[in-house]
Image (cartoon, rainbow, N blue to C red; front, top):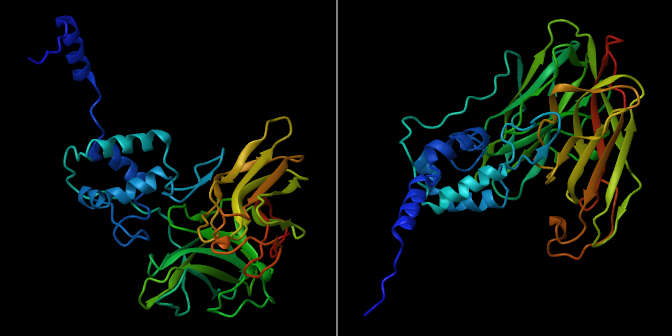
Length: 405
């Protein structure tokens, strides 16, 4: 005769009580959907850049295993930028608490909870009225790997103080990100449609666009002054979809109604003398001491495929250093608008340090199926660069001036 387990009456009441007060597992409606709206829908909705539509429970659960892998590996959202001064991405990285909630949701069988009456929705960021200019006709390759392509946008023949810049792709899943460069009067741009290597062109970068990041926007009292005859180079990153498609876009510009009190100036730093030996992961530092009271509006880092991470700090006199911008997973194809919603004060004597860590080992995709070799500064396919461009607001002194470097 099998023995029966005996539980004292008092203990059985305690066990029953604990079960009654055990937290219910997370549900899609109450726990997962708010995270999806905040951190997934900028890309994963109908017509978005992401390959899946997560606006309904049914669509989300259909891709549950793939989502679980991406969440636990922290590959998604891909906007891995952090700062002590702002949340830079509209879909920032998942927190540890959110990842734990998702794992509990998954382990419980992905319960829906109360039914959603309407699909999830996230309203796009408002950019306001502005000047929109259509790109030249762009045909994207049907097959192949992702690549850059240059397009020069001609502006109206007048001086223009610009306060915001954005891009609206015709095919969001084809045109995945873009970089904006200022072409001053008299400077020849690369040929339209070329897979331009702007690292060799000497053009001035002024901003980036990528889904999941806020629109590139300056404070109301500051503008990027474009002298008469200026042009904008849009370096767009395309991802072939398997069929011929248009890579066209609209470039949006908000023009200030009157000349603002401050100009945007671009201060550029660069290291041309480095080399990265095989199977090493060196860190290269760029430093800048601010000589006069300034406001830092944003940063534009430039590196290529050997760069793994970036850590950039600001140290105001008399204060401890703070994280100005950290990029945990560098990807030159995926660059957001690293412009702070509120300018960062940089009084005279402020020290800036920009640290680029490079991987010349198995962690770098450039070394896939090949032995690492020494990497040096240059613009060839296996070369590397190390540049930081600082967007600074300073009092307006002249009507038309080329940004200082």
